[in-house]
Every structure is written in structure tokens, then in C-alpha cells.
Length: 289
Image 1 (cartoon, one colour):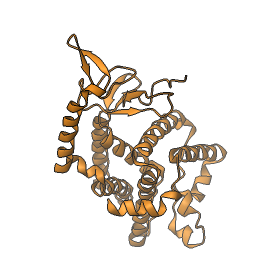
Image 2 (cartoon, rainbow, N blue to C red):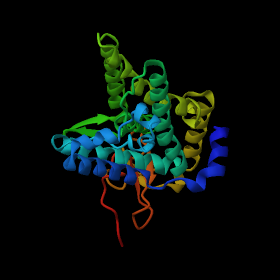
Image 3 (cartoon, rainbow, N blue to C red):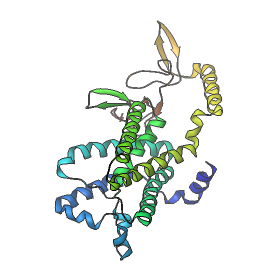
Image 4 (cartoon, rainbow, N blue to C red):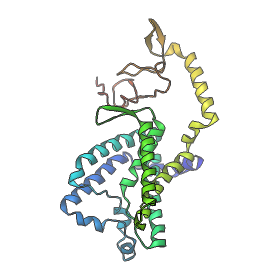
């Protein structure tokens, strides 16, 4: 944690703000390349033999995702979701920490692929598709009760989706390990490298404190302060009487009394002090006076 704070003081001014906008642009570039000629992807892929011959641009261009016409709708939905998730993480962490998390994932994949090449002589493929899912794990760790609507109908909390995705990762690793082809075993490396980024980052930063005794003490202190500050918050009806609360969603009206796991944030784009629960923070209509 202290190390990351020092890095932020030294290099924070160089952070790319609104990083996910540029990630979305990369997907657009990938789609354009696919429309022109899918074979061009070969000249952008991570091939260390070609890099050794002077094609050093591959060390950067390998992150451009492959977007086919048949996958366009699914990719568009995925880009929208990751854009929303990345912006939420940037608001919570700041631009520098999101940059550090994102680019360290790319670096881990690059190092793992290089070590694999040195050992086996095979360049394993990797791109943003191996890195973006770790953004969702980070989001689910910070906002576990945020709901996503599967097929726009079925509400599922982020923490359950993260557990399901983790189970799918383990199943994929198992299927690759039991495959007869050695090449499939090597495909485990991008998955492990991406997950290592998530685990290292969260066990080395404040998010590990979510399960620490200090965090439990902080929560207890927070609840005591809430009781002392009830006369300063908004008033809501509960059991036929007025109750003063600290937080209240401007859309659904829920407060911390409805669920102590609810998280609330103010919207910087609304004119005035409008507070929303995480379910409506990204879906409400902005108030303009």
C-alpha cells in the first residue's frame, strides 16, 4: 500500500484519465481491421520470433482484440459493461490506480508469454480479452451487491457473477490440463497471469483490509457515528414514524436501514446533492436545473 502511494506521488500526473474510453477505441480498431482483412491480425499478434527479427510493434499491438462481424453484438455489450465497470473503478481508486491495475495485467501476460517462449519456443496468444475480465473481479470485490441483469431480465448480484466466472476459469484450466495437445496446456498461462494480477493487487492494497480486524473496528465505529448523526440526515418513514437516516437513494428511496450492505454514492453529473444506491448510480437520469 505504501509502495503504491509512493508510485502515485511520483507518477500520478502521467496517468491516463478515462482509460476505458481508449480501451473501447481499441475494440473499434479491431473491428475495422477485421472488416479490412482478418489476415492482418497476424502482423499485430505476439510472435517473439518475428519480434526478434525487428517487428517490435508487436509488443504493443498484440493487445488489439479480434472483433469479427458475427461477434459484433456480443462485443458491443461487453465493451459497454467494461466501460461502465472501468469508470466506476476509476472513480473509486483514481486514474493512477486503475492505470496501474490495467497495465500491470498487460505486463504480467507479456512476461508470462516471454518466459513460455524461452522454455518451449512457442508464442502463446494474448490480448485484452485475457485482461478485461479481471476488471470485473475488482468491481465485484468493491461493489459485491450491485445487480446486473442477465439477458436484461434476470437480476444477479456482482459477487455471484464473479464466483461463477471464477468457477468457469477453473473448469477451463482443468479442461486444458487434461487435453492431449501440449499447446492447450500453454493456454492456461494467460488465465493464470491475469488472475495473478487481481490477487497481487488486492492482497497488496487496502482492499485486503476488508477482512482485517481493523476494518471490522472501522465499521463498528462508523455505525456508532451513524447513530450519533441521525438528526443530521434525511427523514424517511419506517413503521409509521419518521426516522432520520444518513443515506437515501433519490430513485428507489432505499436507505441504510433497509439493508446495511447497501452502498451509496453522489452523482457528479447531477445539479445538486443527489445520492444513489449502486443499483441506480449508473442508470438514473441526471438532474439538470
